[in-house]
Length: 153
Image (cartoon, rainbow, N blue to C red; front, side, top):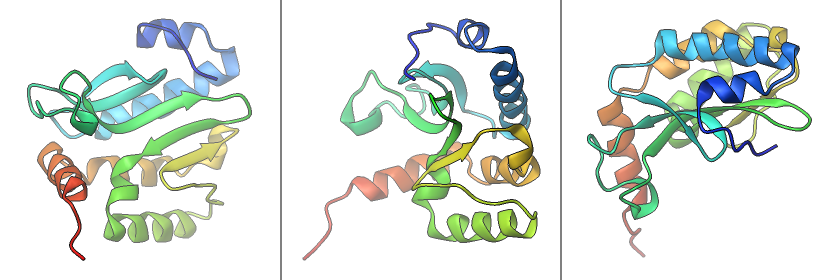
């Protein structure tokens, strides 16, 4: 479900109590492990952690008014989700993440960057926190820049 909430507080207030508790808990884990430089905001109807425009003025998709996404957190219709763009963009981090999740004894329900869950106990919160902590702002922006360069024949 796409939210039109203008602030994180209003986003959380609009959730059912069980969803609010789960999203707030994951948010706390993200914030605890978030490398310096990222900023919390609402983006694309989700709680998002972004590279601020003052640090990456080119913006996401070449739009100088859209900060580069890093991690997003959302309550969808049938599940909740954490969007880990850093895991998706880094094959080594992706391999580490999947192995660490498996070693934590949790079932991984993940698309390209979307980690889906219905209940908080489905998550390996320590692994999630470590994944967030592993990507400094400069590294995330550089990896994004590299992905935008045209590929040779």
